[in-house]
Amino acid sequence: MTGDDKIRRAFENKDWHEIKVSDSWQIFKIMAEFVDGFEKLAKIGPCVSIFGSARTKNENPYYKLAEDCARLLSERGYGVISGGGPGIMEAANKGAYEAGGKSVGLNIELPFEQFHNKYIDRDKLLEFDYFFIRKVMFMKYSQGYIVLPGGFGTLDEAFEAITLIQTGKIARFPIVFVGVDYWKGLFEWVEQTMLGKEKNISPDDMNLFRLVDTPEEACEHIFRFYEKYVLKPNF
Image (cartoon, rainbow, N blue to C red; front, side, top):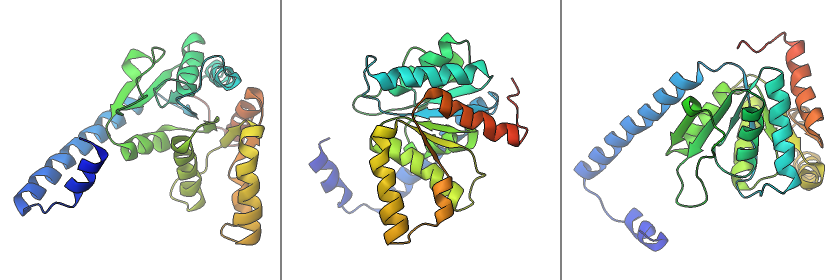
């Protein structure tokens, strides 16, 4: 079905029976994805999610940064969660896998570019049809986020976490953006325009995330945060 076909289909009149049947079965599929995710991820223990582009090649310096972040986290007993696909996600799973850590992949089924990578533990690969369910799993089972350069999907995941913490919907956890050159323009705009000019956020909101350049800085921020709250990995 083409994009034009999907738009035409959305405006077609549907009878009540068609709507009821379609929506009812969709609810069961949504419930099944939630239950499967909750059952598998609840057993893993403290994890940190690493985000970034699916399009990053393995010769890109950011690929190695993601690997190193995952290795440092694994060495301290944290599991690593990625989106399960190629690029930065693959690097994160690879770093955890090769360090002997827990390597988790929350893969999303897409018509292009997304396929799960080979470094995910076999019993820790989950497949999702729905982005919103996948994001719930990231939020519920992550003790921290490390965000490497990525596109719209990476921004969506990172800013959802910031929003939920800002609004008190979830407990605060550390969010670290890695790659000053990549992210500084965005956060200069956030500080100068969103905060300074328009007053659309509070000054304290700038403390909800950290911008760093190295894997050591990123992981140390997470380690220090949980030393303060006496949280230790339990596996």
